[in-house]
Amino acid sequence: MKKLLVSLAMLLGLSVPALAADSPVDMVRGTSREVLDLIKQDDGKNTAKIRDQVEKLVVPKFDFQRMTALAVGRGWREANPQQQTELTQQFQSLLSRTYSSTMTRFKNAQVDVKPNAVFANDGREATVKSEVTLPSNGEKKPVAIDYTLYKTPQGWKVYNVSVEGASLVTVYRNQFNEEIRKNGIDGLIKVLRSKNDNLAKGTGA
Image 1: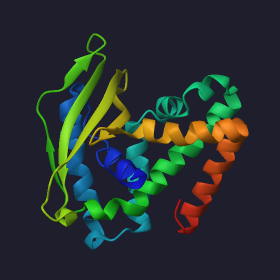
Image 2: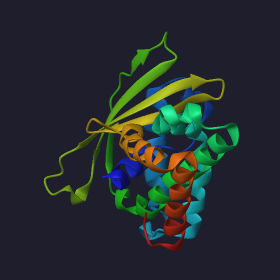
Image 3: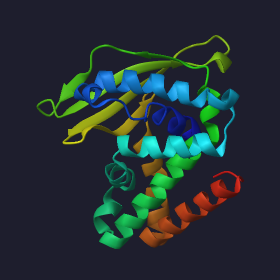
């Protein structure tokens, strides 16, 4: 479930022309096309070249520190600055590597981005709704995906994603809080490092 959440969360994470960033809907719609074009390269193979391009382009479109703070929850406020930095780096690596390992399953996906964003906080935050249909879904039932973004001087950035109502940061928060309860912040950092090491070796999270 978490791998699907991560993969769909980052499906639309590539950069687009600066003008498109003025609208969260345009950003999501434009990036979905670019992502699909990218992962169809090299005959749809999950090559190191494609993975590197994905990571370089995806990272700037997400606020990983904000995502990490939300995922860690109350423990984030208890962590010192060094621990917060390490948590952000490890969580970013986990999301990026999880997506990279599964991204080619979306090479034939159909993405339908809904035209009207739902704005909040005086227009500084927005939710963009979309549906992704995968050929491998049997009946091809679309999967509902909501992207939550906020506006920065550098454009709109994603800080949460919900797939069929399941929030990415909430799914991880449940796991993270349990680890913090048992072993503290350093214990969570250790677990994240271990997951990233396993993904780097190709043994899974």
